[in-house]
Image (cartoon, rainbow, N blue to C red; front, side, top):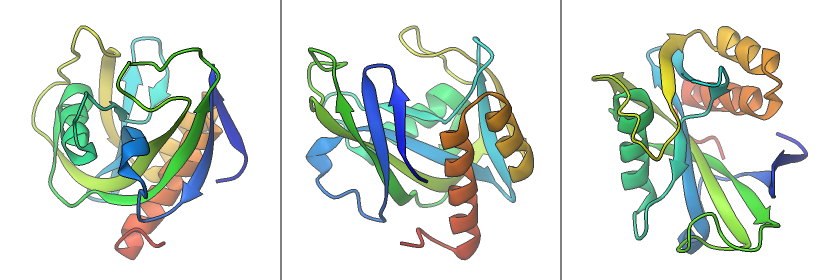
Length: 172
């Protein structure tokens, strides 16, 4: 991935790495989920396709946060190891952190890939995003959907996560 991504008051630069580095800076974890040779996509109630994952709870290790987010957003469980392949090195211009316990103004959004199994419906907790569709699709379809929604960074993440999974690891 190249360049900087803007998410409102947050800007992020993607760093390819199989090690998250300083874990005290990790505030979010995201996954390019796979079921066999397909990737799993989620669509929110606003119509946007999104990368599964989210903000860690206070004191929550990133792997525990990932398992929680998978149940909340996909109704899924992780059935293989989560392979970290990079992170977004983020800076926030907001006067305070999104949640009081996360690092501010600099933090990391960890990204990896892994095999999942759909075991139920998304939990959609009241304080989270509303997932209306969970769908395993071929990688080309996922990329097309992200590009159609002007989400170039997510198309690139899915391509990279899918390619690295086929290679058998993080590839860093």
